[in-house]
Image (cartoon, rainbow, N blue to C red; front, side):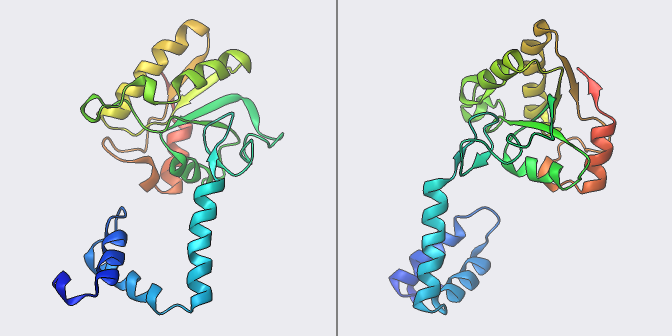
Length: 201
């Protein structure tokens, strides 16, 4: 339906939903009409939830994962193995690995991968924070769990070269993750096999 058929406020609402990742025009329209059908209280609560999340959620001081406190629940859990750190691209990857229930150590969220084409260099990622953690916390193994594509591989190799002089073992998720695949889309069984089959870089 052409945008001229919508009231301007509705057209803008649809456009906002359409700008979200994975939301096409039809889905955006469906969500917009659903939101309009909400009661005033429900709509206010929905908007407040978004505002509060945006205001309160920030990076964990230790691992750069998302949290609403100083440390995320994983970093503050004394039962986790403190000597192993799994390096991932973003918070969605932490969730994917946690669903396997097979990994009981810590994480470090880079906030992306090295991508010169997109203007993302090492300084735009939390690599310095990772190096500091390895030094300060006597980490014995770093598992590189960036995606199995060119940018993920480049990032893993770059970080491994920085870590090797520190005497830390650097491994890479290997079997089970197809080349070119994003970690967040892998199922739990595939991720378990990838963790078990990690190799040293």
